[in-house]
Length: 339
Image 1 (cartoon, rainbow, N blue to C red):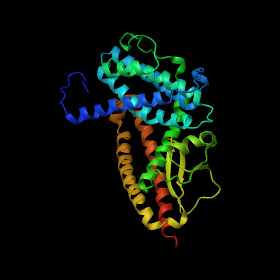
Image 2: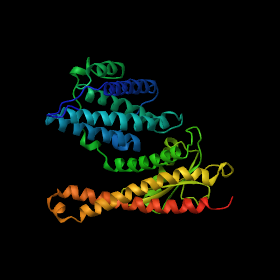
Image 3: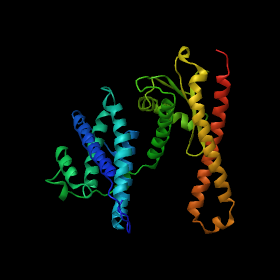
Image 4: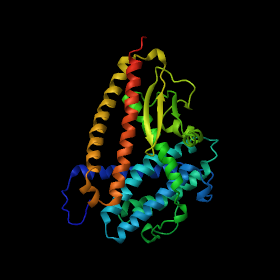
């Protein structure tokens, strides 16, 4: 948080939050150590599975951003890059991905996953060492490494050839869909232990193939019993939601509970209320963006990249609003249907 020229108030809740981050590192180390026993296959990064190529690519991008921030003496930016990468991407996503491969005794990617996990976590600790020297030394000594001390180990530098924009886009699509299913579970109060069937509907052939190839990945992380892409029928009693991927591709999500457990009006009311709230927020934001984009003075003074970002966001919000209107119409029609 120590940005140049900023005075920081010492807050105990922030100290507690960073203690939680340290605990996250300890738990990640335990998980890595528990899963290193077994065959390891350090094949070339470009030939590894999608999740392994993705994390190696994200790690290289993080190395680049940390190096850029350190060169500019922006230690706060470097620390923030590491904090968010470790917490959000490595621990919350990659470790969850590895559980799918390592938990299946017949998984063809288990060996390369062990190699990727060991390699990436060791590099991650070296990257973090200047910011958290004591805990990283302790953890580094516990995992496979080369050298006497992390303090004199080579600081990581990115491998440009390991950066994989395609893998990052493909994982981004899967993340959006998994988060969509998780949000639907939360809205409808579906416990993680309830592995209900799910379905995805898309009219884009490329996205359909991508989803077909990664059905077990989505079903595993979204806690679905099974997942169908483009089912022939859409059950009337299904919980539904929509997403806009990459600002242009709309997909419909469904979670399908047993029909006899459903009270349509009771079950759909909370979801409809949240959708209507989001619809109001989107409508207000769209109107503000339209006024801004119609302002000639703003367009003449604002940096071109900022204008482009606003136009892209405006289009995404419009597509999301259209999807919400369709969902609400479907929910209202289904709720009025006789039992």
